Image (cartoon, rainbow, N blue to C red):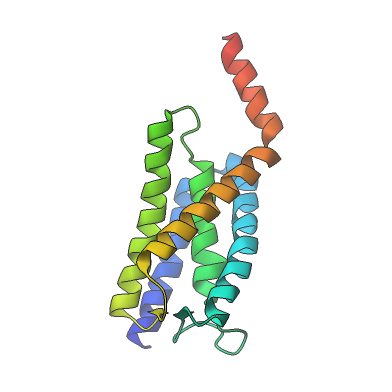
Length: 165
């Protein structure tokens, strides 16, 4: 097995472990919704970015399917988005919420930059790390809006219950 495939395998196992650790069973539907919504966004954006030759994925799981990375676009980013939404600090201050966005976007961007520098999993062509940071932050924000809209009744019920105590 090549070093790149080994890194990919490690990231798959690591991400699966994180999903089991940070998404409780009672929040499984929340995680699944976030995962699927993020897949929709990354499918469109990922294909657009690859087809415009801004990023290249030399080593990928399904090299003949399309030029984007199945692992990044359809598993890693959606999995981390699910963890992001399920554990979002809903009742914290705006500053804490902003730091939460920055932390999650920064973490994924950092892993991507390291993968770009030390592996053949990703290659920036006409792309910079800050575009990843911005697009990841934007897609997190979009997924958060959708998540809140979809689970609006649950959020309103919790807020009403908290106010009556």
